[in-house]
Length: 224
Image (tube, rainbow, N blue to C red; front, side, top):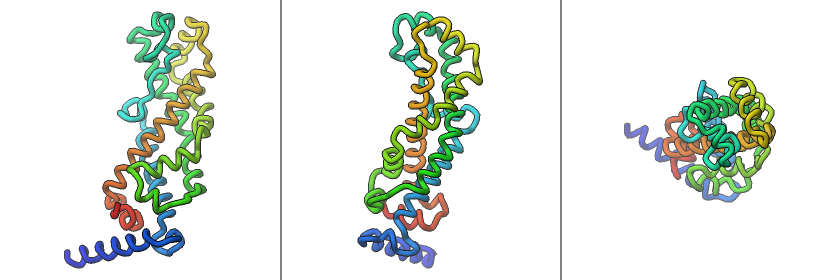
């Protein structure tokens, strides 16, 4: 046990010294830039593994997609509420948009992976020492709205795929609803949900890097 504790102490001390040095990302063995990319890779893999389960979005407390207002959601107009506001209809719509989210996420996963591999990190040490979701925030800022745009075809397909009857009912009953706008609304919500999920996974890893069994993550994030 003493040898193990001493080894942990030496690794932590080395990592702390490296983080304090200018240009530390270029030093072999302890690269903050590589640590951030590993952190984001593992966080996104864990997030997508949960979200892509059957009803992954629907069952998630942080990723469930709400029904768009134009489909009778929280701030719907009185006309839409009268047509779409019944509990059975809303339940079907809620299931529908969350199933569509899964289809959109299939297109998002490879884009996220590519973005992490090629992302630019100007101040890696600041991200490491930042908040619980600092790396996720950096990823989101670099991708901007492109994730929602990437997912839009999948979301549109998903809205039509699983419960076509309910979407046809909506479009037939409420004349001012535009299907393209609905799809874009859901895609934006899915994008936000994915970042929330990745951020939650990042926070877990930061809180317990030992659970990753990754020596670099343990050494770097065990200090913050």
